[in-house]
Length: 228
Image 1 (tube, rainbow, N blue to C red):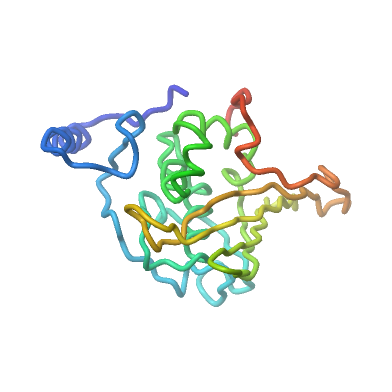
Image 2 (cartoon, rainbow, N blue to C red):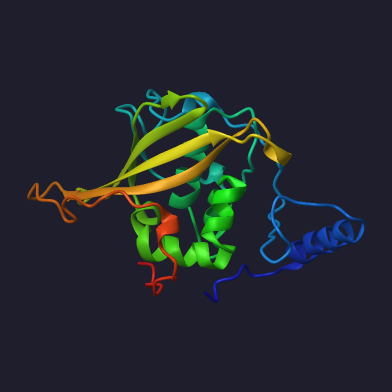
């Protein structure tokens, strides 16, 4: 990718602390190959009244549609205090605010269930998959969340992202309560499926009848396109 963060004095200091911690036997949610530290709390609080999926009345979402940037999502980590709607909002918000350092992608990656994250592969491969096949999530200017559908310990949420030019892309998030380990009892994402893409300018489907397909269907990373 060649888009790593610039390391200034503050970053070097943080990396030094992390190195000392690792030497002392500290552990983290990911393996050492892909670990990144951004100096944020592991379980920061998020105001559910302004981030819960499907909510309205907050700035930028009076009609239930989220607009504008939401940098508060960057760097968040899983917490069992978040309902499935908020887990989806954190992941989508982080992806929409991703920058040159891939911080938004790294945040979203943290909220996948361990088994699904293993299927996605190492973080660099996940970045390639998202930029090649799920680019609308990275470039969306508006987001509309559907209601949470729950059944036997699972949940799903429809997410529609759009541009100011009227293009809309639909996704369906699937989540489960993680049964064990570090995040036992936490809602985590187990799949993100593609839906249809439409344009409001002519009402025609850009990808008509596109069958839902999970990210893990892609066994070989696609070529990465330059971000606009």
